[in-house]
Image (cartoon, rainbow, N blue to C red):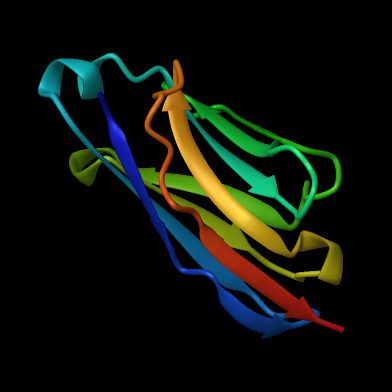
Length: 117
């Protein structure tokens, strides 16, 4: 199973930026089978919601709420995906998780983002 480790969260003010990182590790065969990456956000009492997705060819899709402010990038050599978050808003706060596609059953611990108004 592929495991993810997220990092980069923190406390920022409205309008600031953060860059989240997601590193995947696991069996080589599993990593070679990765067809995409997703970032999700979870807030208290709510389910995880997908905010960004990148397929194996690098094409991306963003939730309307973050489009034009968030950007995905990846380093294939290190199996790392980044989520650049600009112009942060209080509603962007939450715990951010990443996962591969098809999803691994082993979710990481996530990284928490706080945005003060």
